[in-house]
Length: 261
Image (cartoon, rainbow, N blue to C red; front, side, top):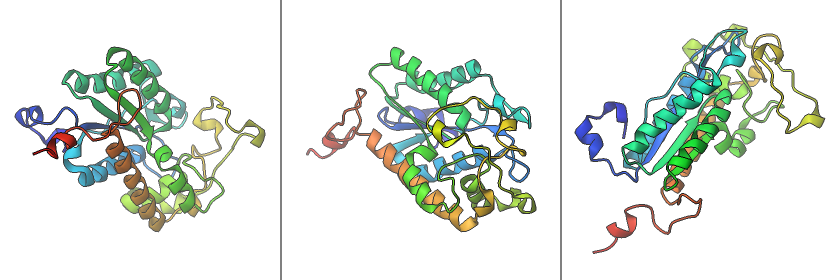
């Protein structure tokens, strides 16, 4: 179910145990070969394809394209500051929680949003302790599947990398400047594995990218998209069985009653 396509009477009839799926992205530079809309294109497509599979199991919200992207300003971005973005995530989700929904999944498509979505959901949890509040970046829920498909030395999502470039070659090849694709990387030393270092996009390399985009292909993009969507569908279906404390219910909301005559 797609919220933006509903009328209010239709919205009122949606079960409040339906999982609300809220995609968040960004509008920022992606090197000289991918467009500003990259994160929004990918997050929107993943969410839309998941909704097409899930149907009435999910209520899909519009993709929020404004992200926490201050670290991309050296090359160009539309951005909210961190505090504003926390409020943006909070208030988007709060709108659905005030309407009575009890299960919510924030699907993230931009690295800069990770901290803000975590902070927003922690604040919401204090107000709505009886609600299941979940969040994840698409690359984290599908990390194993993504790594198995990639050929370059970076086995995760970077920025304008093998993953994002492959996905865009599959989804919107008309927006990819193929002749400008190049690798760019300036990764911290191996001894700093697991350490977060605050860096702007200008410090990653020379063109605002991070990764091995020359390994990207449209065929990989199709495989990546299928794998990511399958994992998002699996997460949403499991959230239908999840209690606020993280435990698992025996039946999804409504299933036990539906099975009784």
